[in-house]
Length: 439
Image 1 (cartoon, rainbow, N blue to C red):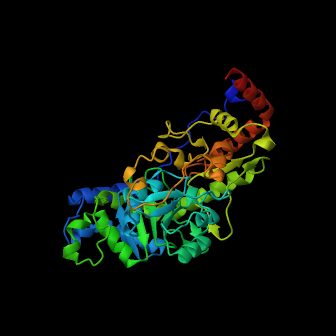
Image 2 (tube, helix red, strand yellow):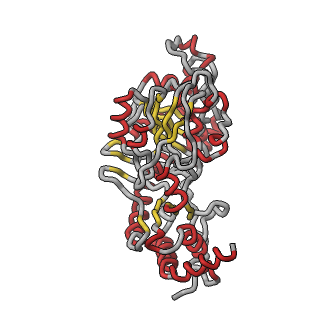
Image 3 (spheres, rainbow, N blue to C red):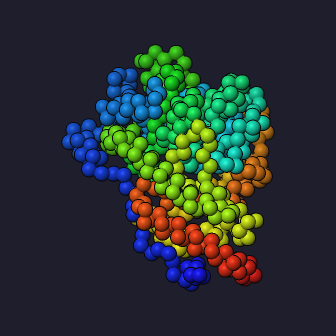
């Protein structure tokens, strides 16, 4: 039995993994075309045809809407901007509450605060890590105005139940699809099921424009408000003769022409990139999932998982060691990727429960929590979302070895590392005991 790299042995692999680079000659040509035109951005802050941007932006929006089978699409400079715009377009403001996920990137919970509303954290499903519909409903009251859900790590949320809850309580549904472009729920692409959906084009997503985001909706009123919020809407409501100007004060969330040109070419590649992720993930799950105590990502019936990451669950009772020890041993056996040296592609827990951050523990955003229009009493105490805390502190670990750039040989090295670590569980138990004694 080979000695673990963590305890002084040789690693399974030292050769760095291939860069996951989706940028090619097509994007380079598209960028040069924009540069040669001299038209890097065409937005103006007054009501005329250029209010909504230049030709590349408009073409990208059209093609994204067609691909996702929705009526309206608005390009912005990030998913975060898209979430902020969506909260505003859903008429959310001071005194309101928005149900959010505690198990995601921070922007989803911050978005309500931007408009003076209060985020309320519901717990997650222990298989998909998306919001649990039962917990959503348990947190609804007369102040609740919306549900901001996340299709986390590429798996869709339970949309039938959530949409039924929203209809029952007259709530808006905002879908954060940053990690799930072209993920499918019962025959429908995510993003177009709720009132509004938001996608990310950040550099480490399925496709990217460096930074960027796309907002989709089938509601013309929401679409118009997002256009206004994106581009200094307060300056154009008179020229546009907008009837409903609530929350139409605007920001600068505009996507430039170069990013849109890149996005048009990237979108063409998205279906194939997703299928390669799925094939790699299926291969890894099929082999790694045979190890007792390691549960591969769930894929619910009628759902298409697009694998932003592979998210496993680790059972300490079966393996006899803590998840973090297993992950440390796995990291020691495998290298990182090109351009990711500072960001490991294996991790424990995924995302810390957001409500444990200082902004919530200390109620730092005073105009939301201390607003005269807010008469609620929101809790952010530890233990608020027990499933989330158990997943983060004890069970979940993730890897990104299913990326499209990984070859069969790369995947075999990953599998060999998992099995090597697992076959040395007894050595890891001793390692853990010594570490505890010296701590």
